[in-house]
Image (spheres, rainbow, N blue to C red):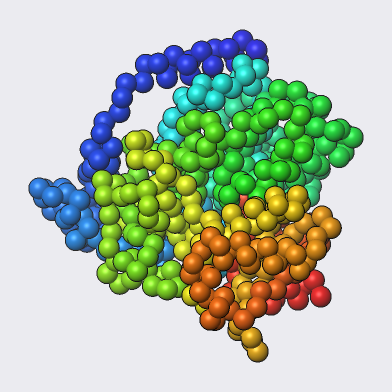
Length: 503
């Protein structure tokens, strides 16, 4: 593998040098929209909404926004269900695969079509990420090592309509050509194991056979695998078995609440690269060190729009207004948060994914994910986004020198109005001290919360549960696996049900 690794690194560096400056981003996005409309103009969706007329308009973007309504999953799925039976509904042909979302919102899993063009777009974004690796000064030996990818099961389910279903990471692994096994682990055979505990055990047993230089996957589950490998083989650091391990590609959830635990198991400072890879697309990736911001993929088959996550675009519960203000990429700024709206070559049109983002830079356009529209704690007017909740947990944990990976919070109305917090940790934590620091942190960083605490939030309570108890909950509720994510902001009834498990 050594010679191959040198060739790969040289090719990446050469390709980076050859990369000419791309088109101006506004022109890129306009061209992406034009290509999407042209490809889908003869579909049922395209004819219904007049794609040909939009293409002939002098104001392509304005006509697109005036002609095609914003779609939620419910309205878009009306068309996608028809595409499971008939071709050429929202995209030419019929998708061979449908991605099932991991269901962080607590609702029934969604089914997102995966077209050939969509899969190719994801591959191209991955290549674009790879061409940025020289910016991180990745050691040469990493290119000569295995890539460990922790996915959901690649053993897909055959639907009665003839397509295959699974989570997006499992579909990607399922479609890997056989020669990928030369550098990819744990390999298709292990990746196809549906039972999480069985798959974890196989990975732990096979670990000495691999020379892993990099890993990719959701932080919570990658961390559990690395910790299990260390424990089973009686190691101090992960490099004691994989000496070349230097790079971790994160995604799915915010990384910061896991940083301390990753630092504990590594004898060297890891290169952390963040990605925005969802069932609906591979939208962004980190392009330089010392930041977790990600460059938006603007010429890879996606067209983006942005709804301001304030009174111009959403109500007090974070729900989209009937007629929201909406911006294209030429109109965004680094001050506001936005609800992301995408049109893609999977046949999604002006589709609200449910994520909120904020631009950290406009040259190039780099973003950070600030949360989910449904993970917005505002029942009592506190206006707390997931990012604000994450930051508060990290800062309090650092102040007390403890580790908190997972947390949950809900606004509950009973005899009092309260915020109920739950944190998962094995540290010996003073409950009262932690919750008071958390409360003070949020009041100091967010004036809306400070006002709400004085007027509408009577008290803040904290429940601490151990990692073992939380793992038992995941096992008993069948929520274990490579792509499963924690629902951080819960509704009151969901929180009461969750807490009842530990009583």
